[in-house]
Length: 321
Picture 1 (cartoon, rainbow, N blue to C red):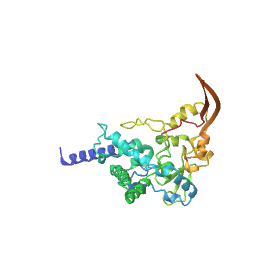
Picture 2: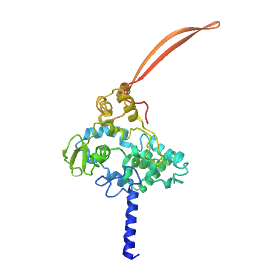
Picture 3: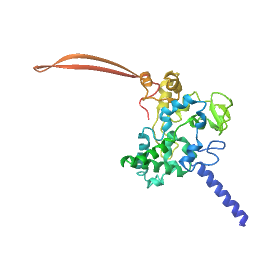
Picture 4: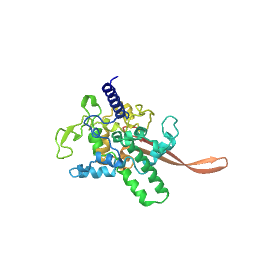
């Protein structure tokens, strides 16, 4: 074989390898999407890639609502979420014989997608170096907590809280589900309820998302379960599944957005169990109490008979996730 032909074959093989690597993680970026030109190689790069701070000037109220929500700290959560990532490694990946993880330093993006698919879907737009940095940060944060190392604890906490479900995840990356029908979400476009120009240098266009007011937007994360497209399927959130097969199937008409944003008055806060308004709307309690005297052989003892009925008025199972 001539040298020129050999070089062509090598180039084709490398191209094929790169293509396979790009598609190794389900949901990775396609042409025109944020993250398509170059994958993030650090947490800082991933945060910058999905920086939505330019939205604040015109959408201050929505931003303040979002800041109060767990979406604004989806990897860290209350601290419990970050701790669960470590548990998934210790009691999962390190114990599974074919995971390829024998040490936390072996963790790659694909290993985290069982959790990150919902808690940080844009991780699919990053290299394995970011997955390793996230795990190192979680370990460092927990160790600092145990050792009363306040400076390290606060540094790692801030880094983890910078990874979140922000404006660009819902209004760009996850704004289209049927991509072969409606196209892939494009960088520089904000998806919402209308088409037109958008007064932003970074996002000069608005486009209508076919799912922005539909429950399937939320169902991408608050989902059907299990995630069978992953090499090691997991099941966590199932709210959207029960919403479809119990609530909608029985004639229910309201969307996730209707209950969690509009009726609750929470807007982009979208809390559930931490919201008194949502708790009152979702659950109904009825209690009946009656005092009785019970004869136990020769003794008469006072007792209370208590009957409690709890009704789930939400459009899905409670609890979820």
